[in-house]
Image (cartoon, rainbow, N blue to C red; front, side, top):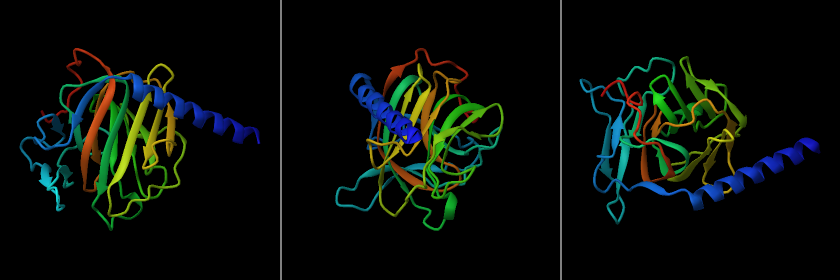
Length: 238
């Protein structure tokens, strides 16, 4: 009973923190990709194939979305995702990031995923969430990359990400003072994963996938901007 009470209190705290952040943090970036991908920098090496593009999805509105075809030739310095798109000129401390995502690798199995990145300081130091279909030590976890292969730091673990062929609502909320980070999938009130870590108090944010393919739309970032953005917060391909 005591453990259940602690869990309920923690979830309530995450809910309150996220609501307060969403109301108080200024809107920094909003992108529906109707004007292309000029706000984004990808992990694709300049000499290799460019695996990110804006496409028109088949619906009555002819909506533009950002697509990762997967298969990037980027080689990260440590085991971590290699299909990454980061906001070009924005680094944040506290933030709330929302985006719609659609995984299109329907037969990928237990590691079918999309990823969200934050606290990105350089290619060897950042956080990300792997929204994998089935949880295991390398799937459906919140990870830190800290000069070594990715390491799971998840506290509240997910039972798995219920990908379908449809679009889903994704959200990450970060409080650098407390170290709290929370990940949401479709239900924007209750996190599916949480973690607590203060290692990286600032960084760039981004979207992507470990080694799948998928689409993104309606990206929105509210946060406390870090200016100027430190020069080391770069992708090695650029």
